[in-house]
Amino acid sequence: MSSAAISIGSNAYSQSLVSGYPFGLTGTYVATGSSLYNTTTGPAWRAFDDVTSTYWETTGGQYNTTANGGGYLGVQTITIDGVATPCEWLKIQLPTAIVLASYSMYARTNFAYRMPKNFKIAGSNDGTTGTTEDTQTNQTTSTGQTGITFTVTSSTAYTYFAICVTAITSTTSVQNVNIGQWTLIGGPPQDFYADRLGNLLTAPVTGQTLANWLG
Image (cartoon, rainbow, N blue to C red; front, side, top):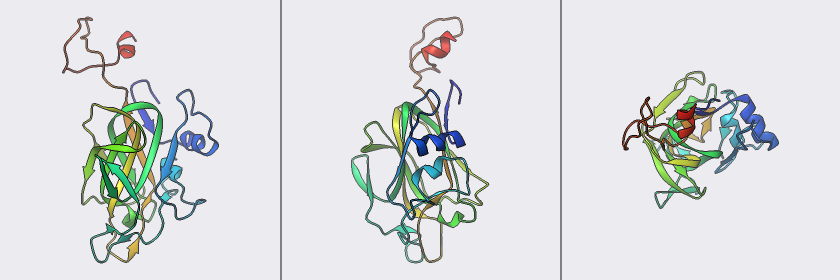
């Protein structure tokens, strides 16, 4: 971790979730999922442990890949932009609000066909009502060793982030969601504006936190 960015995805981070103890000096992270296939092998925190052979896995048979392009069949919902959206979802609560800059996803090793194809990323500060940060359709991934990265244009800091999966990549049989790794990259809001000589500027310009400017 650095002062300029907060990266979610490390072995130490997964231990924080298992034990409930703070991760370094930054606080405690909490991962939750809409459903679990197996609480031992596929809990939500496994999507953040930086090991693609471990994974978050939902209840089986929730996506009809043979009849409607991998669309969701289940009963789970998450509220995004004021609308209850049917999907399986994965959520992470951070100890400090960040502005999301990008995120990456990796498939569970040998199970790329269970990765999200159509999905939304939402941010929230109450853990209940989310605001869309990014929307993707018809995405595919290869192996668990090759990630797929998306850039996010956002200026709002959130303490919760969720992915809502409305379709998966499989084209055979009825499947569930597997995510080997979901890595979030972000930092604090750019709330202070000055040039290198110390002259105060008026937004919108490239900004930085006051702490960074002071060194």
